Image (cartoon, rainbow, N blue to C red; front, side, top):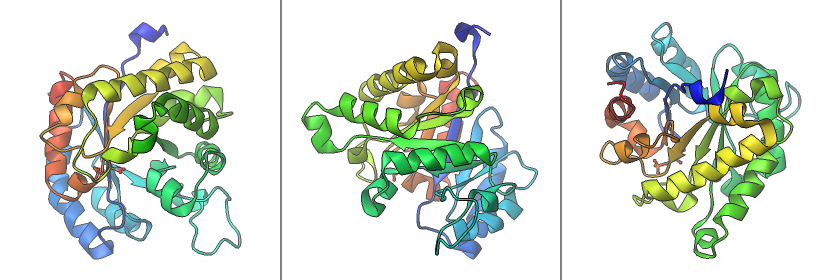
Amino acid sequence: MSAAFIRRVPIVAGNWKMHYGPSDAHDFATAILGGLTSIPMVERVLCPPAVSLTAVHAVIAGSGVRLGAQNMYFEPRGAYTGEIAPTMLQGLCDYVILGHSERRGYFGETDELVNRKTLAAFAYGLTPIVCVGERLEDRDANLTERVITEQVRGSLANLPPERVAELVVAYEPIWAIGTGRAATAQDAADVVAIIRALLAELYGADAAQAVRVQYGGSVTAANIAEFAALPDIDGALVGGASLKPEFIEIVRRTAEAKGLG
Ligand code: 13P
């Protein structure tokens, strides 16, 4: 198929981070499920903490709402205290967030480690949502392109070419995460264009056009339409606002902005 005819299904994922243990996760997922199921034109993904995955899985089973993990290790099993294997997520989750800036920043994850995890996700039937993003000091020093290029080349190296189209990339400028200061739509679009150009260079134009790229960083119901209205941005990775019923509104406005509402 020619790249011009590829239609990407928008994808909005809620990264609950370290919120909602099993009981709260069950209750919150139950509360938002009806609203989410009424917007099937957007792919909706809930990413609770690992300990709450099974509780949320039970709530959303058969609803079309998808489940994602927030992290995993790349080895299939073994003596890795505290880690979660792709084999454990297989069959439970559809997605796994990898290389979130909080993992990179607080837990020392490198592009090389994120790459090993990304390859493992593909190998075990999980769709990776790979996060990239620059720090404020990078942006201020005009290093955004260099940093993003390094992260994309490093984290997304050697992917199986026939699977690249399934990949989801989340562009999350670190200075916009949890700060209430979202990027401008133009800033986001500029970086997403860089990401797609790199993907085209690495895996070809068709694959680059098929990959879905989300924006993340202080997304709310009030600003999602600015991002989702851009043809190159396929949805959002939402933190704080995904812990509230506002998440439903974010999905709804994504559908509307894409002309699917
Ligand atoms: P906030 O939406 O809270 O800024 O978090 C964004 C994020 O890190 C999602 O992964």
